[in-house]
Length: 263
Image (cartoon, rainbow, N blue to C red; front, side, top):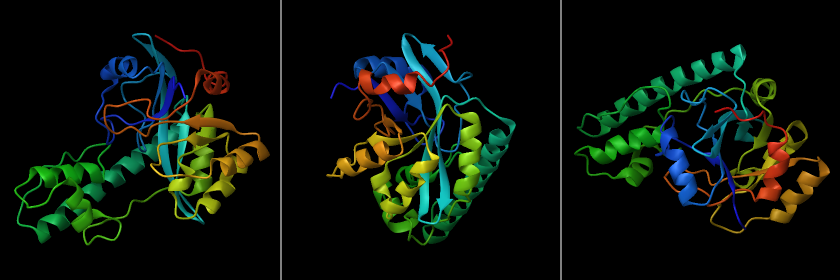
């Protein structure tokens, strides 16, 4: 599949490795024309319009927002974000919670291991930042080990995040975004429960690098039943783009819903 649009990319504004100025070079290298920046619980501070053209590459201002549902926590992707006061207030609250959570996890690790962790407690901070600090410390523990020993979901130093309800999240994103999509439906313990949200969404992330076989035909049935758009992306946290995404034909319906690019 000739991917030209990677609609799920993280940057240094959350837990990714790419900066916005680096996106055009990375996109051209990997044959991608369109990139959606979907940082966790945050609109990238360097993107000031829903859609921007940077050095010939279309960059969509997006977000990945985790919400609480009856089936557990799921992630929603919003595209072409026009910031509202309500969304800004909720994102500010979530970032404050993220910072406090990271502090508490770092404190707990320091109680377990005699080290002082160097973590930047600032907007966008998450578990990967804490794990990188553990890896860089004198502790006999690498990045993966930090999750295994300390901050995995069942770890002794794990601290849960405070996330909005699915109704609250959908209200906020529906008011602010041109398209709202369910992220990686087969990553959840209860995929059936996650897919029950389909009737309230604009799209489902159909193409995603799960690294294992998934029931794509089932997704196609849900998409057809609710007349949904299709999104796709690599969920890039490193510098590689286009591992998964949309062809030009698949991207066209998404593009038709987005505002014109600025820049």
